[in-house]
Length: 76
Image (cartoon, rainbow, N blue to C red):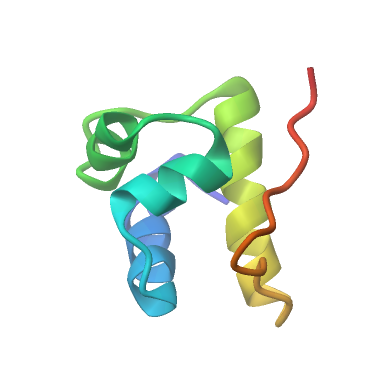
């Protein structure tokens, strides 16, 4: 996925799930202000954060959305 697609895809996914920016931040392992900056295109996610975002996005497009209490494991 191109970096320029991440903000719109992430926001659409979050809204479709009815999640706040805080809840999405919990799922991808960052804080709410980071989610806000990514959705607005002010920050391009890299490294582990980008991988977590792609896991959340990919889980929704595969028809297997992450459950309410699920959070993908973060690689260290």
